[in-house]
Length: 134
Image (cartoon, helix red, strand yellow):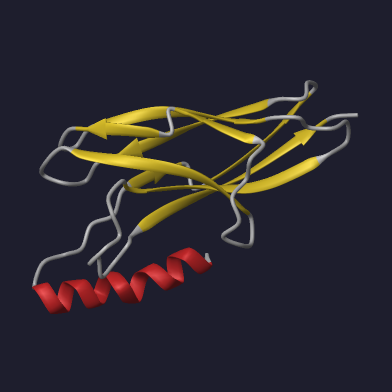
């Protein structure tokens, strides 16, 4: 929710400064959770390109409540080139889950570009919760 609150004023500012609506990558579902009996739990997310031209997108795994990266999570593929209006499913895998462990993380998608000179770095995050049963 904090990412959405922070993004809304930035998107409104972009609209009023440029006269055009600001767009951000689409990502869904916004929240998912699941349990597994193994040390790995996978989730499918869908990345969507809302732009009128081909764009390259990047996905990152981050901690639930900070900007720290999550190293025990694989994203396949972690980047994708999508044409206008195209979608692509990606697989997110939580690795090394211990018995009885619950792990929370965010997977965020954004345009894959240099941030030099960029006023708004719009990204969208899905919150994921993986549990390993005892």
